[in-house]
Length: 449
Image (cartoon, rainbow, N blue to C red; front, top):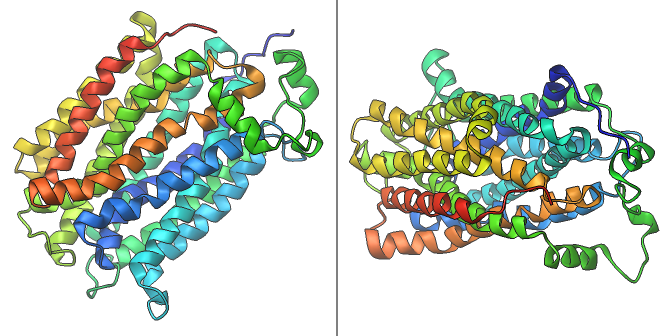
């Protein structure tokens, strides 16, 4: 077998630039979906249920996309068709989500918003999963940690822009940040339009500048089974779903161990994304649970966007340090310590009453976020067979979506029954989950399989 050629740094950045656009849209979703749904009438204890649309869709979409991207080859290549298709649908969802009230005469806007959240998340997943597999397709093992850290850096840059844009439009460009009850402010609407444009442009850049290896080249680099039988030529009595289930049962041991780490990491992240806006509005701005449209509430929502931008900015910088930290210590140690910083950040929010001081815990969250986006994939990629890279990267998403579904189902009722709908306690639970994840890292077997 031939060795995979080393790529230049410019080639690695080009092949991952689309992640910047994906994360711009993802950050807009994370920072603003709860406030949009609350604007349209969702109660705080039901927010998690509406957010369920996203992880459920991702759980269904990612393995299917991974399975078929392993078996795809056309003029665009193996992974690039999925980048482009996902970006187009995600951009449409970004345009329509803040305008869900247009259909109010037919369907309640909150349900339209939840449906568009589902479409947006599914489309982002269609684009995102093949990016992970592309790194493993094209980079030799000694460049993969750098490749995943570049993706994390671009994710951070896109997320900073996506998180801050509503604040910038309102406070620097004087775009209206207040709207009548039941309507989304202009600064949020225009932010979503801009996100759609950035998503399309960056994905096109990656599609145009990146060449994928042909099936013949993949066989030379990874062995004769590196490019599985195309879906159109598969034996009919064994469907794609059956193969996906077989691959799930046969997943490598390292993947199962990382699944525990991912479960508690993403249980925490989901709780943070869903409840930070109401938590800050209630706990720091001292607003009642029922206030979801006042100027102060929108100030809190805009400030949450800034805070999310801070943690994503920290993540972008820290991601570039991770390869060096992992080399000096180990990948497991680097990931565990990073998760501990995130846990400390989330837990400390309970003791803060000044909005400006909230920037400090976001530094810890950013350190954890960078590692969550980098180290599990760096550890996992070396434990997977090349011919199954796409499907296993897709199946790995189960350990991301399942904890989000668990959180979405139970967090609202728990907050209402035990904590009088005080959303800050969702952040406390998130911090405790990251502590458990940090300990779980040490039970992962990190070696080339």
